[in-house]
Image 1 (cartoon, one colour):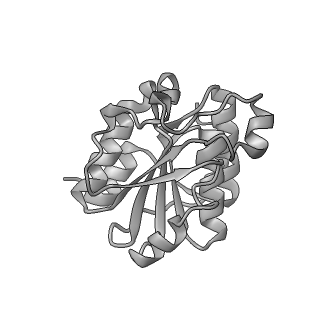
Image 2 (cartoon, one colour):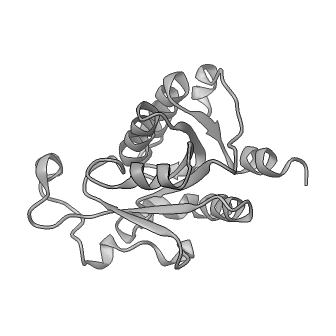
Image 3 (tube, helix red, strand yellow):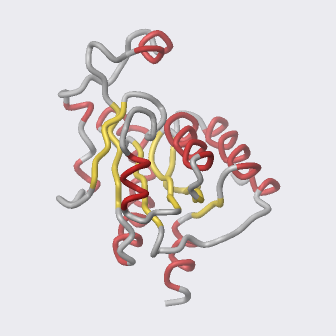
Length: 194
């Protein structure tokens, strides 16, 4: 692991005053992918909560009418709204005040009010976690960057179906879109050596 390191030339810590944590699509449908990163993801959520960084969850789901290209690409294997597969994993410990953004494509910004909501909250930076690294997490990170948000991408609280795809995303994001964090770096960046 770590083949992306040669592309990671920039380092920075998130500013808790202007950051939001995005927890992308950690739903029952993706539980086999999410379970291995769950300890790191929960630790990331707890670190952000301790510094009052808002936690925003996304939930990918479809109705019969909105499958679009994803229905074609995945041969109709879509997460249907209203099913158990579409629900957030209960282990996430979502709080009532946490925002949940429903989306129906890879980007959490497309056809949602996420950008407007972040701007209204004074958010300038997003920390991206969740699944799948190479699809929804990467697309959301890239969109955040081109919309003017500083992007922090978790290397240990994101996952996908294949390590090679995970590494490819990390290389691309390190090269042109995101600063990297992991639980250790995030803890040190937010709390110093406490």
